[in-house]
Amino acid sequence: MKTVVHLLRHGEVHNPTGVLYGRIPGFMLSERGQKQALTVAEHLRDHDIAHVVASPLDRAQQTASPIADSHRLELATDERLIEADNKFEGMKVSVGDGALRSPEHWPKLVNPFRPSWGEPYIEIAHRMLGAVQRARATAEGHEAVCVSHQLPIWTLRRFLEGKRMWHDPRRRECSLASLTSLVFDGEQLVRVVYTEPAGATNPRVTGA
Image (cartoon, rainbow, N blue to C red; front, top):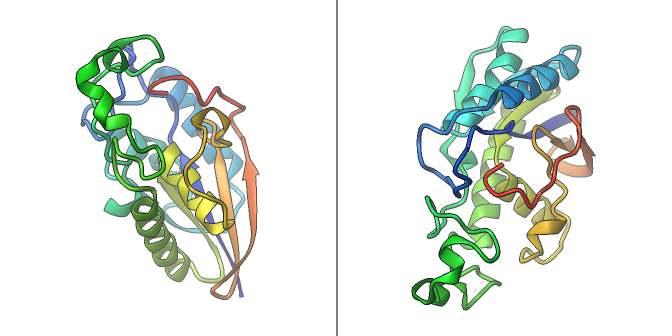
């Protein structure tokens, strides 16, 4: 029995100060982000969507709503789809700018493989996989949409593909409002398909 779980990254967020907002509440979609959410909803309009679930953060909920509405489904929430925890939350972290210039923050950077500045990659992968498996079971034989965030989606993809989870963030294939679709035959993952209904975006943009 074929089931597809689409991992949807949220749309662009209004973030004029360019901080790493992480799990801070109140960061909403920008006007462009709202259009991206509508674009993805239109892209999925004719799909057999039976379940829509999102991270509890505002930007994910906003991105998921048009999809749930177009399929006349109740929007569910799964805490496991939330953004990764990060010790630089609320700060500017661009290279040569903000927190990274201060020696007091350098100890947070000592281990990029775990990583030392936030939630361990393996923990992100495991909680995301749990959310995906719940969505797959709920939508069995149909399709589900899980709205999450760039790092959790990319970490899970690398985990499922048997790749090391530490990586160069500049090389993430996970644009704003992109779909990383996991195709299951029964409980077995058989294919990963990546699409960008709203177009490509730069993964290096802080707080996008």
